[in-house]
Length: 209
Ligand code: B16
Ligand code: MG
Image (cartoon, rainbow, N blue to C red; front, top):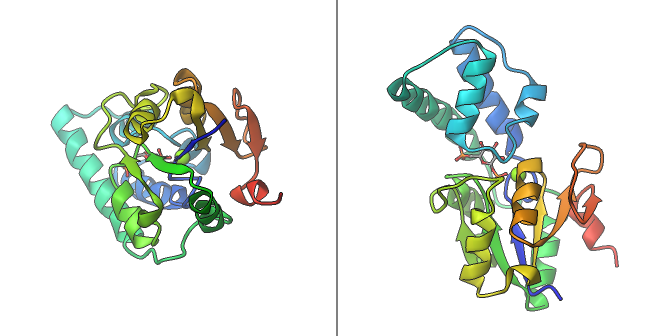
């Protein structure tokens, strides 16, 4: 039986993918090429620096490690301008209701995100207090699809991997959860996700019964 639930952040609890898209697009345009929503889909769950590498490759541009660091910082500052406008309740449908229900039923709750901005986003949207444990891009060295982020979550919750449920919207995240030996629910029925134990469209579907 499930004792702990590990949430991905972007695409599961909050809709920050649109902010990532806007900031990456601004960066790509400043370098003289375009960046599409379809390309943005491929960056879900992918770390900031790996995302930049992919975007530069799509634009046919090569940059030194130092230049890449500056570009990643520039993108992040544009991204943070958007995140800083978020308010309590700027969460995806069903998120607060599900977190509340899990808390009331004594499940342990962790965050397992690739984002280095995770804590800020949880604070701004007013849901940080639901979390017993936060594992994010600052704590993890091997990013998704490596299982590290979820294994660290389970360990910090002091719960066996096999008793953890992961909620994920990205293929890299589903692969990471499976590699960690966890049960995984994929968010996005028509996004072509594979390998999840089941797929739902949004968190409200978990609250219906
Ligand atoms: P940051 P998640 C991921 O969040 C996003 O899906 C991905 O698009 C982003 O590049 C990554 O976080 C890193 O974010 O630049 O804030 O460190 O889905 O793992 O919660
Ligand atoms: Mg995600």
